[in-house]
Image 1 (cartoon, rainbow, N blue to C red):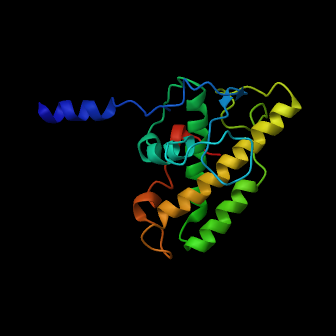
Image 2 (cartoon, rainbow, N blue to C red):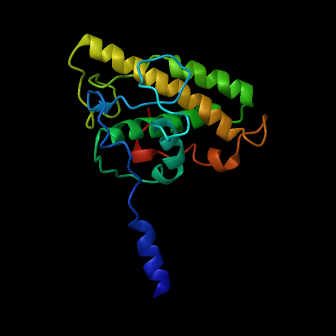
Image 3 (cartoon, rainbow, N blue to C red):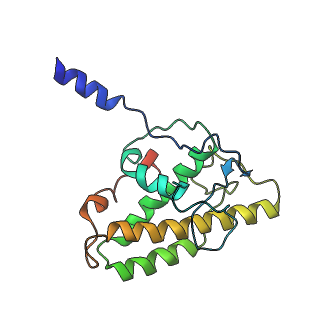
Length: 185
């Protein structure tokens, strides 16, 4: 009986939602422009380095959230969290068995590569977002997502290669084939 209760509890655990859902920030295309503690230039509002930002939250919740196939969006912070979780999955796939320096170069190039935006046909989160209202908003959102991707790549490399500069951490790499929401960027 106890085993049955534990199994049911495991399968009914909710996904982790963003703590930034109620943040009062600018929203473009149903994606919040949340503060990021970074030295990378971009439109993100600055965040204090001692506080958790959206990039840190995405990295901290990745292993729990990537296992879910359904996710209830409770705010604009969740939309950004979903996007960054999908981007982490893409990064892990790109890293493979590379060394720390090779991985850093690969993720930097990936962060700057052309990617689909909300409102475009091939944007994977089309049902969660809407098209930006103007060309200026679209440019701001693209710059924000690029900035977030660059910062996430920097922090991800530091986490994955924390113990060894030549071999990625197996406890991160085992998630490289998991598809969050059965989607990929």
